[in-house]
Amino acid sequence: MQPLEGLLVLDFSTLLPGPCASLLLADAGARVVKIEKPGKGDEMRSYEPKVGEDSINFSMLNRGKQSLAIDLKAPDSLARLRPLIERADVLIEQFRPGVMERLGLGYEVVWRINPQLVYCSITGWGQTGPKAGNAGHDLNYLAETGVLVDCL
Image (cartoon, rainbow, N blue to C red; front, side, top):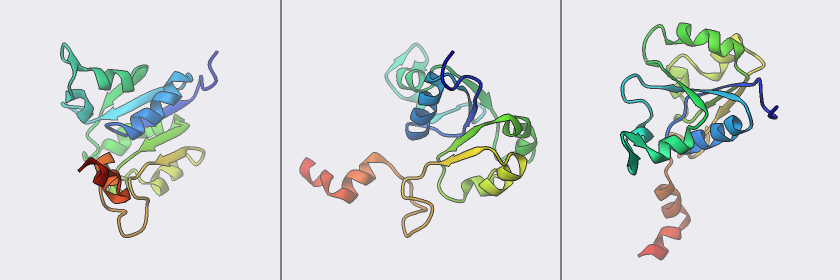
């Protein structure tokens, strides 16, 4: 038996930070359901290097996870996700502040469905403050901290 066996994690994240977090939970035995856009899915799926059609990075970051394609902008997305939210223990998202609220999946809405849920919101610059609405990427952080000047 693994330490997190029996836990259900809903992963709304893409690329690197959120998938790394949910990978740790999956490796510890949690059932992780990765919510992806219909069609293309997580942008990381298209990144090189690939083995066949599969991105090696995507495969490594999302091993042991299930995938569910749902258009979060569709009017019925909350209704489709509700049964999972009711049973989930953890929700991970990494959108800019306010996006989950606009999608009808903000903390207040989800809390009313499942008050025991741990709602993990990963942002580049925090929930408030002058940069809260900015996208966060490693190059931005390197430039902000002055590390990038060493590369010139």
